[in-house]
Length: 75
Image (cartoon, rainbow, N blue to C red):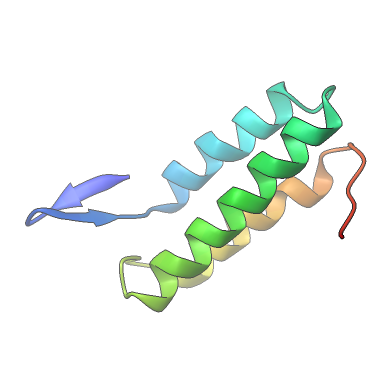
């Protein structure tokens, strides 16, 4: 996250770094699933709080995790 005027701002670059982190741990399904889920929550929170300069690009960047192969499940 980048900081502007003391406020955390989320950029698509920040999100793509997190997507890459999910890619690195994709061989451990549970960890990758939790990391992806956490990323989605943080992106939604940042968008809802107005902490994204470009919400569309941030959301699009987060969805890049869908291209990473690992087992996903919901309870």
